[in-house]
Amino acid sequence: MGEISGVPTADIDNVDGFFTTQSGGGGGSGITPNSVSNTGTQMYGSASIWANPSVPKTFNVGPASTHTFTKVVARQNALQFHAIKSDGTLWYWSATNNYTSTAYFTNDSTWRQYGTDTDWTDITAGQESFGAIKDGNIMYLGGAWSRMRGDGSTSSLSNWTTVNSAGNWVKIHHGYRHTWAINSSGEAYSTGYGYDYMTGQGSTGTISTFTREKNSLTNIVEAAGGYRCAWLRNSSGDVYFTGNNANGYAGPQITTTSDSNGPLLAVDSSTDYVCAKICGHSYHGGCHIDSDGYLRFNGEASSYMRPDNSTTDKKLSNSGYQLTSAGSGWTHYDSAIYSGSTSEHLGIGIKSGAFWIGGEDSEEFKEVFGQTVNKNWYQVRTGATTAAQRNGALVAG
View 1 (tube, rainbow, N blue to C red):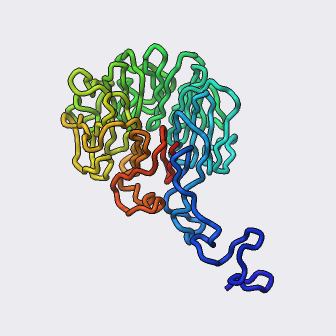
View 2: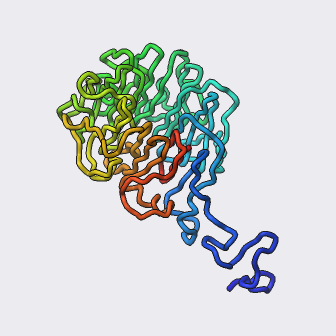
View 3: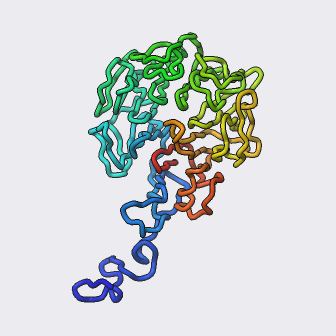
């Protein structure tokens, strides 16, 4: 038993608000974990608390903030998040820096506004980088060794910097070591490494500056990436695919697991379904959201990445599968990092305003939420419109 000024701590409690060894988990009856909030933005950590393993796992729920974001993204190899509000302001949350030093971060796990400008309209994150659209220009932050900047440079940027000032960009996406950008004319451009034709340039070489994809598609409104591959969606709900399709998740119109030298039509809105959103894909599989709000799973399902908890694979011509048992109302789905065959298997989604998680690597989060540890999908909270996850951390709000 310890002592304070010679008095056993067992005899001391609530001295100037200080609690010692009396009952209560995590260091005394005066310390209680944060509850999961149904309002505001909240961070959730994994079950591992390396600094003090005796602290109960339920303490890894952060305090709820009053911030409301329209989009939040997470960097893959550092505990750093960026978000945009409806008023066009940019915010960040950082717990750690990394080898691609981003000097402006205050690493105190607090949401902070970046500057005062109100013309930020889109945001994305990659393995070592962040990208954004600001006043129609492409901004970049972080490491750039894979030429994801799109201005020909491989130098890291420690603060937000304009890398393309055309003034007509509307969407940005950082995929696996490459970047896609879409302009106001509905044209898609890419830059970076071209593994397995993932940049849509008809080459597996490196593209140093933003170049339009080789098939000159029109009316493109969205881009998303998986491991060494990418999807493009047009305004009619057709989806095009290019790159690695080893796990057969490209879409029902692509009937081979060979690399697609695309972009090739993967989802035909006139015969398959109308795609309303392309979602994040891991190495093994992922989802599209159709115009009726149902998830369409593609790929391998053994790691419980399907929100209906089925482990039935859906590949190639059988991949356009409506998850009726998962219901409709889905507005967001993201599945782990796309770092290769060793990627995590953690899925997150928002359905009718509720935040869900599932998959093999959701198990330690179940401990944080005081739930039975398993791979099944679990509703964490209601009152959510956007969410992101990386590196053992979740955010929803």
